[in-house]
Length: 275
Length: 275
Image 1 (tube, chains in turn blue, red):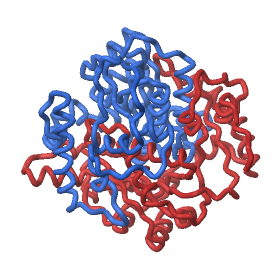
Image 2 (spheres, one colour; image 1 turned 90 degrees about the horizontal axis):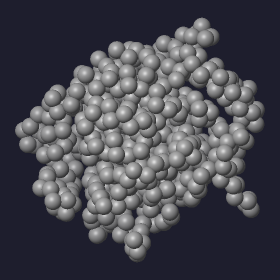
Image 3 (cartoon, chains in turn brown, cyan; image 1 turned 180 degrees about the vertical axis):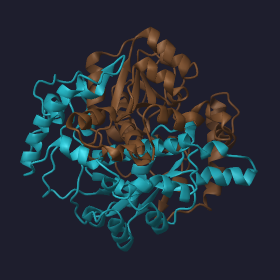
Image 4 (cartoon, one colour; image 1 turned 90 degrees about the vertical axis):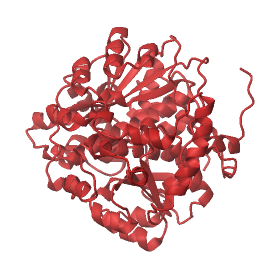
């Protein structure tokens, strides 16, 4: 492909679909990769090498972790049969089968539990809801570094929250012991250039960035503005969605959570007391 | 400072303090920024401009978000008096006062609740534990993009999990309504070059990266290896810590959570039902 590189101003503007957005104060290759992110849902068969995988994980481990606890682990799944079974458990998402690697990121307290047991000391702090959030946050920070690293190498990614739809089955498939819980999956592979993926516009910055104190009331106008801007994006994809309708439907009811209303029970079954 | 740029191999090796780590398969400026991360706890007084702040937030909004829900917001605190009060609430961390900006990242369901109320539709899915994790994960993915963007610009950062120590007081300080909860803070500023911050070594990659299925037993040897490597890092900082002792102490008991054992109650008080 011979493409001209978009200007920094254009790159930031396309994130908001707002040509009034000021040109950025600074620019560099890192900012370009961050701003150009898009989720990829069609992949080539081309594999991801062990050397590349190691590089994604060293990037992930370079992310901050609360008190250096490192309460996360990741399972790399490449076996086609296992990927197919996980795809079925995660709402039949074809890209899980199509891409060469599925990384399943876990909140992992088993490593520290083993250490505590070996030394005969308590680890009662791990039994609190707080600690589960630490595990989920640590896994997210690490995984996001892997996403940025992958995209800098021309690879595509997409997160798979649907590994939480059937947590017990996913845990059995990956041999996860007590205290190791699958937080989300991440598909990694070479993007199929036939897929027309555009940058998805986000809410106007004024809706999410607050100064000194939080402001709810003025968000209505920003959401209305966003509806117009994302309609343009949807139309290009031959869709006639409304963002508000979609997100409200996603969180409308117990049923709309696709099994994840059971998460508390599933975590308890897996040794997380969530006090 | 006139420094030679470390080789890619050296940069990855210092993350593990392991000179046997193979040179990376690829390299670029993004991978360098990711691998060179270190937390900064001493800052210059120099401000962070509005234009730079906007760029950090557009990078943050470019991160993936579950089903495009965008259930996070961020409050930028620059007022010295407010920063000082938040520093006191977060265990008297001096760098919160010293740095020009504290970004407080929140899990935010108030925006969608307002939208649902305006339209008279239910949002019962938001009442589940699952949805709180979505908010925490979304905030973490966004914040980590902001960290990478900041470091690419030569700025320093450090996460402040201690905003969860006294959640009600932090919420009052920031005017957070029901359904908006402070997940963590992030200090941003210009690093004081007088601080000798080194890259903190992480667990051997074999401890956190599993292939096809999870393996707990072999982790003991990797943890033992890590104890040796991080001891070298601690010694350089004139500390005589053991990683295992530190992390086990951090999670030993209710008391060791510094108030965060109350997180479930605090979230409930703030409108999160966590069903």
